[in-house]
Length: 150
Ligand code: RB5
Image (cartoon, rainbow, N blue to C red; front, side, top):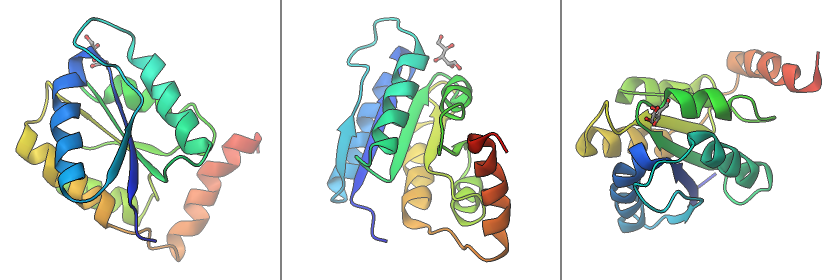
């Protein structure tokens, strides 16, 4: 599956890095749908995690990227949503592996943790790597079973 659309969201603490990563993706031909926030004014990261997850659940795009101060709050909030497998990644290896093995569909990172160059490399690994399936499918199915209360 060639991915052409990405949903992005951030809180105030991730806003500046979100804009830079958004421009990076657009320069590479991706259409980026930004669910907010739209400024550095203080807000709750949960609002934008929820909005992004709803967009993915509604089929707006297959993958999403959430940026806050650390990436941690965003990943906690996102992982409460059905069908969402969010991974907080601060290195390219984790970003690649979480697509290959976990079929992660949301990437999270923190503007207060990593810089622009690394963030773009992490994003490139995430969007350019496919799920391997095979032995990993049963494990992902086991995670997804929790969505059905199993
Ligand atoms: C905001 O100060 C900060 O708590 C938030 O961006 C995030 O890092 C939470 O996990």
